[in-house]
Length: 345
Image 1: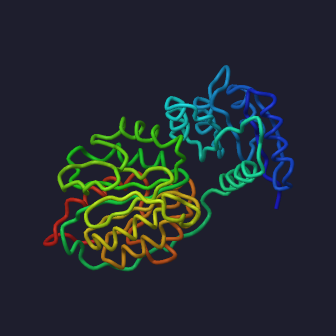
Image 2: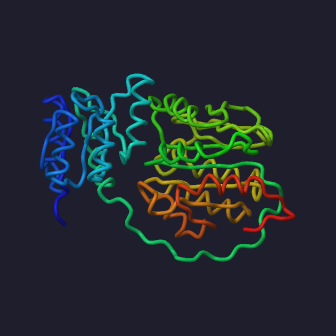
Image 3: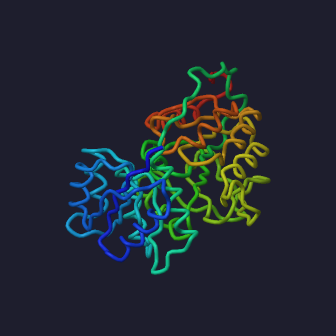
C-alpha cells in the first residue's frame, strides 16, 4: 500500500520538526510539504493534493479555521487540526474548525512529545485518510407498529465527527420538541465546557451537563443533557447517575453504558440515535435498545466523518433506520410526537 502523503501546517518551525519526525518514524507516511501559514497551506494543498493535512489553528496570514474552510471548498482533503485548548475561546475555535470540515482534532504537542501522543496522532491521521469505505445493507427488515407506549426520551451517541453532527441536529430541532435528550460523546475534560457553550448557541432549548442524581426531566420540557468527560452517564430509577465504572471500548463516558441503562429503564419508550464515530462503542447498546422495542436510528455512510460506530450497529442488526445527517432531526421530531394509536415505523 502506498504511503499516506501528509501536508504539515504549523507556524512554529520547532513543532513542524517534531511532527515531521513523528511521521518519519512510520513507513506508512511520507511528508510531502510544510506550510507556516494558512494561505500557503491552501496553495500547497491545491498543488500537492496530499492524502491528509495536519493543521494548527493559530496561524498567521490566514487562520486554521479559514484555511480549513477554503480547502474543503476548493480541494476537499481530510484535515486533522491541532489545538492547545487553553480556554473556552480556543475550544469554540476548534469547534468552528470541525464545523468547517475538519475530520478530527488532536491536542497540540507540548515541548515533550511522548510515544503515547505520537501513537495517537498516527492512528488519528490513518483513520482520517481512510474515511467512509464500508457498505451497508440496501434494505432493512420491516418493522412492526411503533410506539407501543408514548415516547419518553431520546438518547444520542457520537465520537469522531460528533461535534459538528450533533450541532447540525440541535440546530434543526424546534423549541417545542417534547422530549429530553441525553448525549454521550467522547470528549476530553478541556473540551467539554466549550462543547456545551457551542451547542447551546445553536439550540432553541437548554443545553447543559447532566448532574449526578438529578431526576430525568419531564416530557414537554426539552433539554439536552451531556455526559461529563471521564464519567459514565446512566439512567436508573428515574434519575441520572455519573459513575467512575471501568471504561468500555477504552471510553468513559461510553455510549454503550448509557444505551444499556436506558434499555432497562425505558425500553420501548426510547428513541436512540448512533452518529459518526470510530470504533464500536454504542453498537451493542443500540442492539439492546432495539430488542427492548426502542426506535433505533443510525447516521449513514455518506454523511459520517467515520462510519465505524454506525456500521458496527448495522452489522449487529441494531438499526431500524439509516439516515443522512440532514434528515435526522426531522425524524427525531416526528417520532417524538407519535402516539400508540397512530405510530407506524
